[in-house]
Image (cartoon, rainbow, N blue to C red; front, side, top):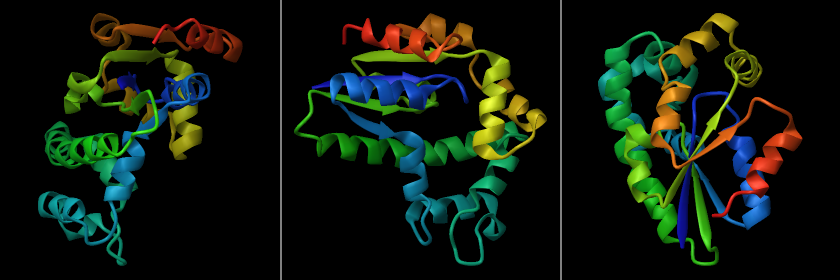
Length: 192
């Protein structure tokens, strides 16, 4: 079974690429962001670890993780972002590996992970695809998706790996600066 990693900075179009890959290859998609949300349930070991690092006010009164508040903290404080990443990667990587072990009916698994390299998940991938976008389009997508201002979206992109990093490290580059048709065309030409 092949494992493909799909990465890129926020708003580049990773999810869209994964959707097209799923249609073309009938593969299993494991979305790292969805895994993180699932782990963020009240009372989980993961949430308790985050409370240890960030305090009780990082959760809602019902005990669920306040992801928006946490995002505001980590996007403005490098040290706290690093602490969260250390805590998060341990649980997310473990959960993704567990999910992979249960996939038996597919020839390919795609891991959609913005922090693929930072988490070390690239080491279990046969191929890494990086999706590159246009910064202004990325900002617009993030604003719509997350309901935040352009300034907040721009600051999020600024702390992430840039396109040059992905060009140097990924096996395959998908350029998502054109039309949907051009994006589909690039994916159809892939030999995975």
